[in-house]
Image (cartoon, rainbow, N blue to C red; front, side, top):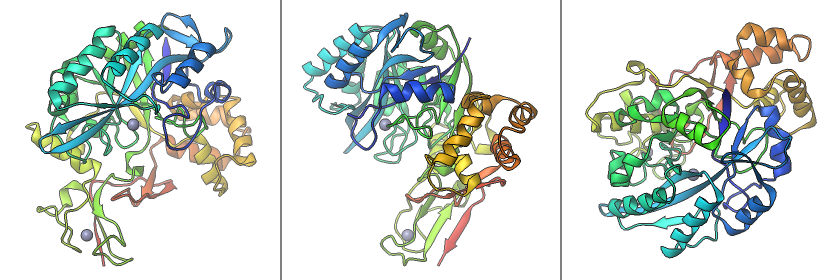
Length: 428
Ligand SMILES: [Zn+2]
Ligand SMILES: [Zn+2]
């Protein structure tokens, strides 16, 4: 069967904003069409107790709040692993999935033994260097070989391939523990097409999750993975390890704040009007800003091109094919808000249209149904102009202008396609 997975989320104990309640997840996820949700933060003592008292095992390795709920939970945490790479300290986010509460208990004991402070939802595992990373991850994997360790949002600054203390391969950070891994998370800042530029990921399954810190309709399930598996932990993880991904739904990476290379207006050495943005093929060869002369902030696309070269190939976006079928999408509440010219995605008008759409078809299915089926389903239910906007997003006809760079966001425009490969702007 096809199951929609969102295996990376957080409780209110992870720091940052947001809070997660089972009531809200149980209410919202059936509308989104998500079947299996990561619990988030399962190593954190308070959240762990909450999970223990709220959930019961409904099928092997999966947990539910009530017997008649359509939502299952997978025990999941994120941990931040830090290690010295040469003379720099690098921190890398990782998702860990557990088959049983007992395997969570044993992992908590290991972390305690290593002196990890478990006071935040997302604990820090400090390591000396790559070999120590490998030793500790092997010990965690040794607890139960169905535990899955997944490098999280790999292209963000906090991901293994991010621009902070950059490394050229997974081995440079994980050493031998790389062999324990069979999947990586695309994250909001990359998609299967961009990651197809990185040769060593050819053997890896690419999964997509929301990394949500709240169960709001535009957060949880905003990215997901559809797997062909039975409804059990083992079947899902084995399916993912073997690459049985049907498709993923992804944010448009150009929405990410560090997608292209550049320098934003107003940064040191720039006036309020001076900025520059470059696609990889247009980046100045010395990597220096033509305005202030300092090194440019390297974007995700440029990092992917660098990794391709560092791993011995010259892959470009138009030379690669993604290993996984995927769509770019925008959360439906954001499309509705955009369509109505309303800024709040939780306003009454937006939610009422959202419920009209999802009374006919859950949001996950909407992205993979044919255009004609969507038109037929929604005709007479919502306005024609909203149906048109949904169809435009399904066709990939939306963009963020400009694409994100040096911490700047672009604005959503529906009805046009962006060209991220041919951007070269120096604005003085
Ligand atoms: Zn993270
Ligand atoms: Zn500059």
